[in-house]
Structures are given as C-alpha cells and as structure tokens.
Image (cartoon, one colour):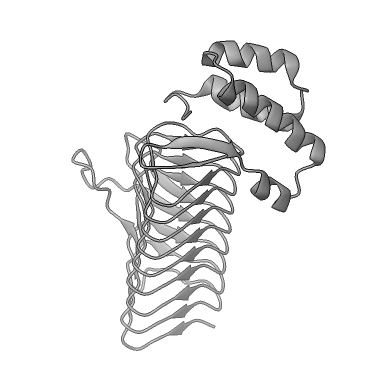
Length: 258
C-alpha cells in the first residue's frame, strides 16, 4: 500500500503511512513518520525526527526537519511536527526545535508554504496559514490561525502574529501584530482592519463593526497603548472577537506594531 520509487533512499526504520507515495531520489531518514496518503515528491528530503500528518505534500527539493541554524544547538533530538493536509512547495525548509525553545517546530493542519519559504526552529504556524514565496520566519515566531503573509516578507525572532491577520508582500515585521489586522512595509505599518479576510471567514456584521471601533481607538486616536486599552474596554461591546483583540495587545511581550 506504499509506493516508493526504486531510486529513492528510504531508511528501513522510517514509517510510511498507508497510501504514501515517494518519488525519485527522495531521501527519508530513520526517525521519520508519515501519515496516510502523503506525497513525497522527487528529490524531497525528510530528516530525522520529522512527523507528517495525513495527506501532506512535500514538493521537490524541500528539506523538512533540518538541524536548527543556531550556534547553541548541539545535536539534541528535537522534532518537527507537521499536521494534516499541509502543502510544502519547492525548496521549502522547516527546521527542528531546540532544547532552549519549545523543543519542536509545529506546522498545524491546512497550512500552505509556497516555494522557498523558511520556517526556523521553535516556530508555531497555526491552522490555515498561507506563506507566499520566500517568506522567512525567524526562530520562535508564532502565527495564529489563518494568517496570510505576502511574498518576500520576513518576521523577526519571538514575534507573534494574531489570528486572521494579513501581512502584505515585501514586509518586515519586528513587533507583534494583533489579530484581525492588515499592514505592510519594510518599516511595517498597520493599515486597517482585515475586513475582506474577516468577511470571507464568516465573521458577523456585529463583530466586524465592534472590531472597527476598537481599531479606531487603538490606532487612530492619539493615545498610549494603556490609555487606548482602557477606553476600548469601556466603549466597545464585549464580544469574544473584541476580547481576543484587546487581550492580545495587553499580553504582548514584544510590543505591538502600530
């Protein structure tokens, strides 16, 4: 029930799930586990300590589970965890975690990583995220659900991007980006509420209206973050989406992009 091309190098200790197909010259190392119906394309590489969910596609020249690019890493048995129905396009790289981080790098279900994108050690990429070509995530970055990042963008170490946020192409994000917002730029600036994305995801009219009001208070009025949070807590309806938005800002450790 597993199809392996005769030129592929698959270690006998690797475990390939039912219906998995391995293309020509692919390399799969011993401590690799795949779920069902995965496709490992020609020349793809799965390094030790990599686990794939079901129906994962690994395209040519992608390298998944490589050692972290960190000078303190000493070969510890850290891991990469890939969820179900994840697509890893050509030349994507995903590195294992570190013992001084999470110990694992996690890519959740339904993520799409386009060609040449890179996910560094200890990152967590939430369900449904899309990273366009050559997006670079530095170590310890966390993306929430359904985050979209445009091509040739980068996110620096330890930053967190909230759910349903949109980062335009050619951007460099150095601080946390709260959920539901969109912005862009090498000197990143938040531009607006990600209304189109929220509508596509089925957010209610009331939720979008309340988030608009919270956004205006936080970003358009000349207030400090603490002053804006205090005002928004009083003036904006206490919907779950608003609570998530304000809670993210309150708990940010890197400071928020504005």
